[in-house]
Structure formats: C-alpha cells, structure tokens
Length: 366
Image (cartoon, rainbow, N blue to C red):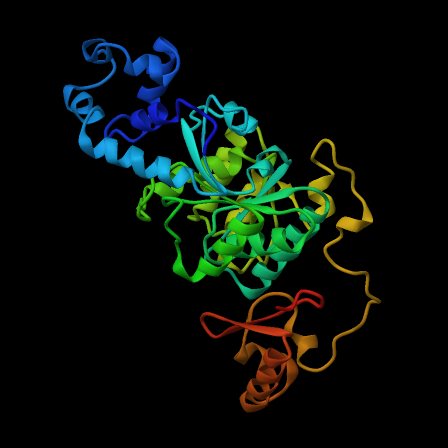
C-alpha cells in the first residue's frame, strides 16, 4: 500500500474535473494538506473555484475514481507520489508548476539518480536512432538515468540505450500510466516497468489526447539535469522540451547534422541559440557538474582510419539520391541500385524517404 495515509484526499482533489493544478495548489497554500482543505465548508472553498466544480468534488464519480486509483496503488511496484512525499522528485519541486501527484510504476528509487533527458523526432533516420541509443548507453554507463517520452523514433532508442547501460531509464507518459501509447512500444514499456520507471501525471485511463504531450514535456526536462536533442525538425515537439529545459535552468545539448536534412534544422537552431554541440557522450559529461569526462563513456570504439572504396566512398555523410551517385561514381542506375541494396543488407546504408540514401557509421549499425 502507498504509505501516505492522506492519499485518498490528494486523489479526491486531483481527480475532480475542473479543479486544475494551479487551483489545487492555491488551496493547499491556504489550508495546508488536502485533508484540511476538504474539512472546510464548501462555501469557503467557493473562493477558489466554481459551484459546478464543488459539486463534482463530492460526487460518486470522483469517489469511484479515487477507489480505482487506490486499488491501482496497492499493487506491487505501483506508486502514487504526492507533493508531500519524501520520494517526490526534488528537481520537479524547482519547476513553476509541479504536478500535485505522480503515478509511477517500477523503480521509484530512480528519482534520486542524476538524469539526462534525450528527445528527438518520431520519424527519425536509422542513423539518428543508432546515435541516440549509443549515446544513451554510454551516458547510462556513466551513471545517468535516461529520461524520455516513450514515443517512436529517438525516444524509444534513448530508452533502449538507457536499459542497455549499467544505469536505467524513466519514461514520462502523455497518457494514464495504465495506457500504453503508441502500442508498438508495448514490449518496451513492459521492460521499462520491470527494470526502469514509468510515470504519468494524468489520471488512470487517460487517452493519448494531443494536448497532453506538450504538457508532459516539462516533466521530461524537469526531471533531468540537462536535455539532449537528437534529430528534430523546426516544428518538432522536441524543441518544446528543449525550451522548457532552458526555462528551468537546465543544460541544453544538440547533435548537429547535415545542412540538407530537415531533421537537423531544429538542432542547428538550438546550437545557434546557445545549446552545447554534442559529438560524443564526453561532450555532455564535461558540462554536468559531478561528472568527469573519461574513456568508459565513449560512444564508439577507436578504429584505425580507413578509406571507403566502391560506392560507399562516393556517398559522403549527407543523404544522396541515385542520380547523384551515378554521376559521382560513373556507374549506371542499375549498378548503383544493385550496390545500394547490397550495402543496405550489410547494414552500411539506410534508405530514407524521397528516394534518398545515407551511409551508416561503423559501430552504429542496427
């Protein structure tokens, strides 16, 4: 069972429709703990909210929702953590609007471990996902918990890397904690619940509403000492997370990319605005107090420099189309297409949307 004897009171306030976090916190500042607020005459509470909300406060629907949440919290490995709990993440207390309570499943002790947020595009390139996973693993090995949002693409790669290292990972959900979204990440979510931590500020059963995801981004950055963006378009939600990180006084990092790639534009904009340019895990650790750059955090092995031959030697590092490769290599379209297929099967090249191809770096094949 959750150790807080007043948990039902916290839940009653938090689960009342129309009683938002800001109003709830004003009540707490006036009356103290939720039990004290609920013990007041409803006319006194009327100074903070409407008659409709006050009617819902004592409704059967809210009572049932409280019972469901208490039942959920009674399961092993399940937690509902309130602002009054010692286990509440200390860094979240520094942000302007910390949630009154958090639903958590898994290893709640990870709240006390230094963390780094890693976010990026849902439609990431294969190379971008490989970079995110390798960096997350190296930073996990360096003692950081990796925080992300369980989305497809960079988020999922960051979680995989966090789990692969000696540390772990925290997934901040934009749904109720009992709802897995997207469904393609169900197996990953189950692994995080077992070896890491899932958290949500939204009530049980909350569907993946569009407005939830920008809101949860402040928690992704708020839980961490810094935020690393890997592949993001200019309109990416990852930039919302980076902006929240900067406003919260966290370090902001970004990985640069090709000047021709739309998924590099957001990262380049961040770097122009003062974000730290990142090429390896060492670049992140050097900026975080309490961490020292060291060889164990390298993301790639030192390899002797070699010169790529054949078609790979003509590709460069930017996305390229078949016609350009034909011109560079002096080969026919049939020869280029055949060689690209071989390289793709060998894990050296990735096919991108729009008929483009990009080489994958050695040691980062997936």
